[in-house]
Length: 380
Ligand SMILES: *Cc1c(COP(=O)(O)O)cnc(C)c1O
Image (cartoon, rainbow, N blue to C red; front, side, top):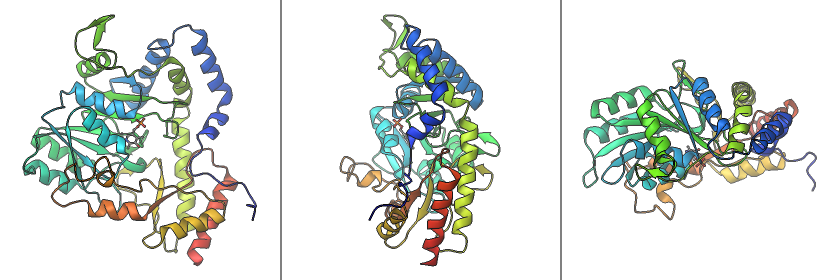
């Protein structure tokens, strides 16, 4: 049978473009007309504007969020002979970046309510490192789905152990903890600018931020062949640059980021209300944290596929972030070390979570259709 309405996709990066088409087209034309396509004025302006918006001293653009994480690790001299603690319930990119830098990832379990790293586990491995691993030199805190990790105890544990806390803000542009923006609380922070992220390019992009000028300069050199001066590699680098067209697009989109996050929160509140009294608990909000709802995630402890199918029949697209924990994916299986407590909550979450449509351009009518489908689920 034909759908009575077109399907509401779970994500719709094209809608973001269409909503700002004139501004974005003008930005692209400006960049194309400039005759300079890599690391020029647009990129510099984006770095300045992003750092100012975030409240960090420096921002450095790069090719994608994975590279941003790997560049931070390389800039801090964390690679071979080091272990980096993070979680398995994340985009595979977090773990891939650790291995790109040459370090060993140590994957810890999550808190089941907020899906972020269990801070007690981090404290435990820092105090009593698992045998047979190189020393732990950093922890990557992944602010998953748009909400802060339980960062205070994590920062305290890292400080006690003398290891760097790096923030993976790929899903948390604009989220705060105690009124302070995520990405300004650790040693350095990585942001993905992938098209579906809260701040998205129309292609690949990444940016990292830090208050350490020396570290920023070092990373800026590493991202372009280790050049401090043109054609002279003073250190071994890579190529991971943000191009001028994407930078120009990102400058236009940055002006809408706060409004987009506010709209995501409004949509989340509408979904919360539609779920009230039903079997699905709305996402937990951490006290003191302002969530930016990169994803709006629910759990279906039994028969997730059937719940997704019912929503699909109502024209509501869903996604799963993420269906397979990193440590169970073929490339990592039986190879990456886990924390002493294992990853039981991670595996349970992977089997139960699903994400509702979430992007600022959802219309009021679309949000109401999702809400009505959610109310239908509550009736059984
Ligand atoms: C998207 C994402 C990344 C990687 O970003 P890319 O730009 O795709 O390389 C890293 N970490 C998390 C948590 C992400 O969601």
